[in-house]
Image (tube, rainbow, N blue to C red; front, side, top):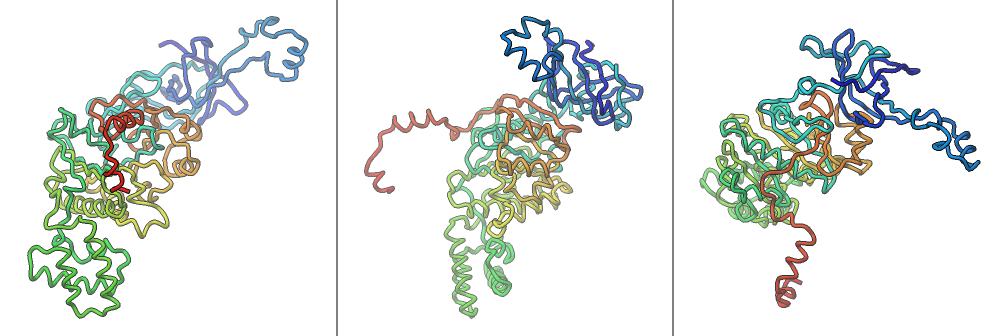
Length: 500
């Protein structure tokens, strides 16, 4: 390998947590911030990550001298060989020492004069803990021409969070993860379930390669079997209900189950109206259940059924893009997520990965807790799911608004561009292994660039996300195309007046 630099002395080092090296080739610039390098030391091969690069020149070190010289009408560049004194210094953080196939903690610094080299490809795979043979490929590691292949167990079993502002590529990245899972042999695939509030994943059902493995359920095809709900499950959908009202509901449901195999919310309402429940207790109960019934979600069967929901190796998408009310979306997520988790606990269904887009809407933090019907089950899966291979992938543009309990249980974070200072501060507190340098670079990430930190990699790594191979949803139309599409249609003024 070609030597790219030499370790130098400074006032504070080299030490076991930081060292500096001068680059040998100023013009070629063979190194970049974030790149991995290696050194031969007495303990073994030391692997480090470049945290910053400084360009300096002794002719320009004293501001007053430069100012005075330039004011005289002369130019430093013309008068002196300043280009010969320009050089680059890289700041590097030691990560580990690799010796006899074993990674060890860095306990002793490199020596001034140690030669610095680009890291070998096989060593980088080993150091980062990548899965060369069967990992999911997200793209290329920045500055290194190797695939970012992540082990499925490390990535999903202890849950994953994808954090980025709107338009940074969250859904695009999630689609690539789904592609990678569906591209595996059927016997090696988990069940994949996607909560899709904006219809961004419908392209899988239109793609020739994936359509046979994909099922989509929308507002018209989603239903909840009322007779499958226990009184406590029904009460969970009405957080305002008191203990007294829940006891009365228990007796109502028990009576209906004894009399009928199948019954509806209308039957529940009729039974409450005909009961001897105190009027002050009865009136709000009826109001709340009327509200649930008005959603149109409750019927005589579950759709999708458990087999449709978690069919081995298939993708099931809940397309909620036509549903306006958030509470209705939360009811769907609460019911089917609980159904999935309970079935997986008893191994009635295969291991699954549940992708939840706009996760802050379904598991919010803080004051919105009471109104978030789906928060409880999401937090439960986050806490307990790893024991049963019930895996969560939470996708959000507002990390600060996402349940701290849920986010803290996601042991791998994929972080794309984020600019909101509150979200950045939240990421700093919740993402293990993230350094100040990485945090400062997050607002400047381009679309398609992502930092991976946590369980799936041994050290934080910057990845250029690969191109998506599956068909994108037609609902993600560009503004210019949507304007043309709308203007090419004939608008019926009577229809517009009726809408208004």
